[in-house]
Image (cartoon, rainbow, N blue to C red; front, side, top):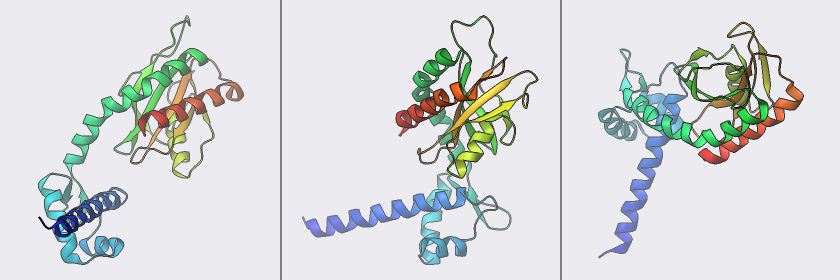
Length: 218
């Protein structure tokens, strides 16, 4: 067996996979989609090579072409994302449980889906008489509420806790921090309560929980 030839084929396969994944990331970061020429320029490869990548990705539903021929993410990506969500929630639950008990408030993991914040996992404290009932699957704009605004802050690399008051529900108060350092994931960890939250006290707890979630998901 020609080991040199086998190594060469493995290297070509690895390079193709790397380019395909980079292509998906490029398209994911382009809300208006990308042309084949734009992809070729950004990847530093020829148009023919891009077409060879696009073919299998389109067949498997990872990419699609819109009416203008621009490349966009396909429904297959959403299918994979939904299959991954229970794993994300499971990984975050230990940190959320600790946070809910420490803060005496409802803790949650919020992720970005379709340009909105979605509550992927929620844990209520066990010892409080009253707490916010926050429904898993609840959606809200990213620019309203601590959870969404923490995600937006995280896009700029800011890790400081963000607070909110009555933005999503009258009489509800929130503190959240972004989950940073998990490739492909935009998320935040936070708490919501029926009384004002001391950010100086709760903020470090939320930050510690976000760091723990990062460690669990990497």
